[in-house]
Length: 254
Image 1 (cartoon, rainbow, N blue to C red):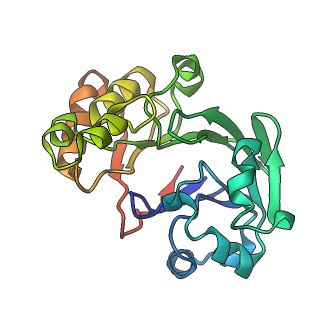
Image 2 (image 1 turned 180 degrees about the horizontal axis):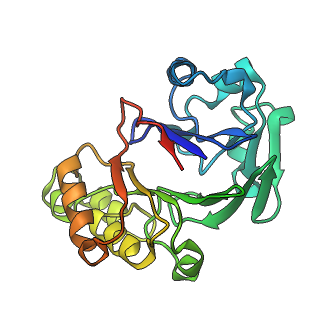
């Protein structure tokens, strides 16, 4: 499996995932040209995508969806809860509604897990014959019922949105601060670190920290706080990567 985060942050999100027989995007929150350029750089024809899966309908996750689908005719896989919003930007003929928790696209199995945000939102456990990864952003907390299933995955693409002190001391209005730290908001560095400390294992090769706030976090703080929470797991040989807003990550190969 190969992973490349094209863009991650409040201005737009999109991630490319490829298995032996399948190429997908998670979210299309940046424009067509940005995605095409990034895929061209890794010798992937944008017209060969097998599907787009959508986590939720905030603009930073679907802002470029309409243009991409018009130009490539790629199917868009969504849960029913997202249908009314997605059909405003994508023709119904391109929409595939998933009625249960599991989606199979060729050799990829995609299991939906519930996120907790201020709109219906989902994370994904994505697996092929050899690897299993988590993709989860835009959630105020992670339900403990998923912890067992999320243990010892090969890679975690997970939100590390804010530093609590920077947020509370920062310029956001009080009501927005409360939204960000609520159960319907975003994961802090500390929360994500504690979650990873409970779940990573000896199979874990990569942790990709995603959706960092430009106002309430820094790359240095995120790394410091995640590493601090993972001290007791220092024997695990894993690499931590920061996903950025304007520059794609390296290609992660599992």
